[in-house]
Image 1: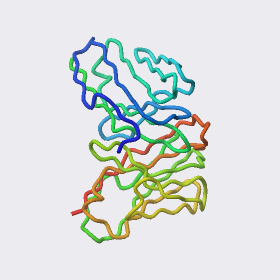
Image 2: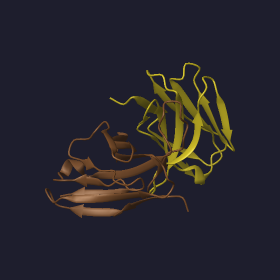
Image 3: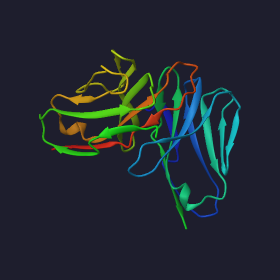
Image 4: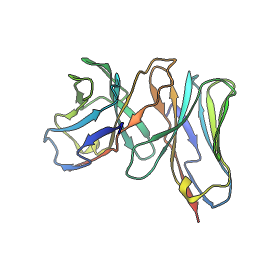
Length: 108
Length: 116
């Protein structure tokens, strides 16, 4: 059983559209991290959210941590082909527990 | 350049033939960890090390061994590989892993292992 559930599993959109990826858990985490992984490479950290209700922006990416620190979302505005990749959320509580990931494909 | 390196990147082997995947980091990190990544299952932790000579089991340690004799190196050993260990393996490191830590975890490029 996955500690962190990510949805959707796959997402394919046209360039310029918006998308949202969700990460949900029944556990409370001290912080939550989002990673992006490209084929043939290891995951790379995008952001860490720590406070319940926190919102962080990274250019066209907006990350939100739920008030209860159990869930998070990643929203991409005006997606570009360069946003294509596997997006992973990871809950931090003495160790990192990863979700299964959301594969995002942005078509030109 | 700050990085985590793994070798080999690709390995095809046969059941029962002992192998070692090396991992090295040049960032003086205390914490190192091994994960395996399988489709639909995400990254699952195999073993981790809080510091030199300190190692502990992760979520899926069966069939694996590790050692941490030096701070920079954390090899993963498969004494008798089996086909169910066919997977993509990642080594990672960070300064710490305290509960309140927001340290970045740096991942290596991965080792794709196939056990026939």
